[in-house]
Length: 356
Image 1 (cartoon, helix red, strand yellow):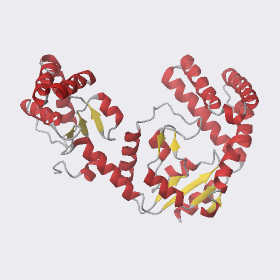
Image 2 (cartoon, one colour):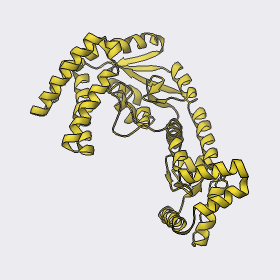
Image 3 (cartoon, helix red, strand yellow):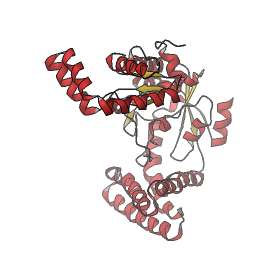
Image 4 (cartoon, helix red, strand yellow):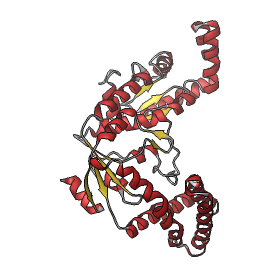
């Protein structure tokens, strides 16, 4: 049995964690296998914190016990107890393995449940995650490059040593990149990345050639530094194949996702807004006249999609957007890395080359 100090084993095995920090702390950074069942809610924690600063630890502890008592206390113990029974191999976790997890542990013991805690708490796990990432990224890596719609993410996902950075970030990296799942906080994104690297522990990594940011998440500096030196395999698929991939991902799948999440009517409003927002985000780079032209084409394409159910009309603005904006931008970026390109080929060629 892990005594709560083998942090790498806890992270790499997705050991369940009952995180008793306040919701605001959990939102700022949490581990992938953690659920949040706080000892104190945000308001209670803020009141205890203020009391601690003004009157010291004893007064703060007394205030905490007066705020979390009676039915509130019983409800929280019941929730912890159910979580412990559902995950008997798990651990309690607070910020530093201090009072909150010890109080929770003591109350559970009174309720007949013995449950271990993470010594050092979230802070110790977080430090381990940062250190693990720094070590894992020192291994050899190869990047998959190529213009938008080349299937780079798919190549990464289907490879045993692939790490899908966009999947971890809940964002596809472009102005149209957002998904229906909100992006994680920066710390949580880094924690998920660390756990993915620890779990796979590959001899080398296959990653997509990303920029510094994926939506609102930025790649850890140690990873960016290594990616800047890594060899690149470039996917060169025909334009029509790329268009078809993008149609499936950004129109067919996104419309289905919005409809499933919001229902037909509200889903359509959300889906239309998503496409308009993506175009609006790059209006300055397109130039206002070109932006107006593309917006008119987008509106016509949406009307056609709503009328016939076909998403093909979107090619009217997607094809020139790739030709005039995305492709030249990516080719320019790739030119600066020309000496790192080690292979070029179709999607199938690259998949075969990676296996070799």
